[in-house]
Image 1 (cartoon, rainbow, N blue to C red):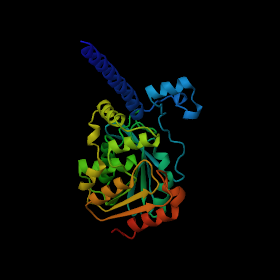
Image 2: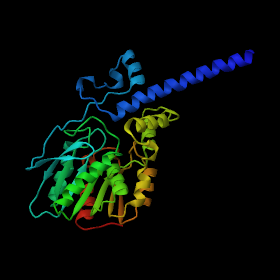
Image 3: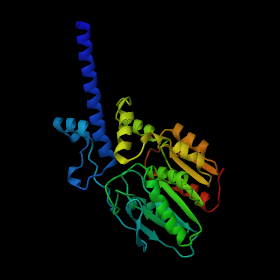
Image 4: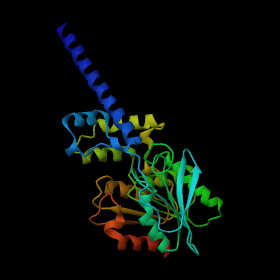
Length: 317
């Protein structure tokens, strides 16, 4: 009788812990995929938090304000609003005697203004550029982000818009989440750009969530898996199926894959798996002493050479 009673107590404790873990994961997943419109509620860095605030953040997650466009192109540009799964805003910059148009897609927590420096380099090479705010960012609708999953439809919307203008040479550029959205779009919608330049795409939703835990020196099991589960459920998809490594198997257009060797968000193993799975002409360049960051900051000369070789000289391996 005593053994039965103890088992019942243990079972109750385990059930309570399981429910508590799921509640915490539910809040964290929601905060991770939904930006707040109120900038004043942004969560401070850990060292600035009181003990109460740290406990609150541990249970309820981090508040991330919706990314805003903080600067604007120096060139003349046209603002274009397109209806996709959400209404999205883009900037179109045209050059004389254009060699084509490059569409730029930002990463998680970014917006189209964060792509201006890359746009400037593409313009110097003679290309039009179109900078895009994904849903939930900049001046696009909503506050939701799905880390590249639903954003793939927005990639198609912008591609179709340019294609309907009879633009023949459409290239896609994306960093991190933007790279993932490009890969999923090609996988799902079979669009055929002239080529793609993708920076540091993660291998799967699960591995990228695990990487976030590792950066905080926190164990990945079981919270990472539970977080992926709830994040997908809340946003209407199965998070464990969001795998750019698999999307790569259906990408046959010329691809330039860029990576920083000190990246703590994406592993070299993930990059090699993606590169191996790419079916078309391809080239991988790894920037030394560079993390998950803007490659132009430390590697402008090298970045420009790789991009120029790919776009102008058509060098792939």
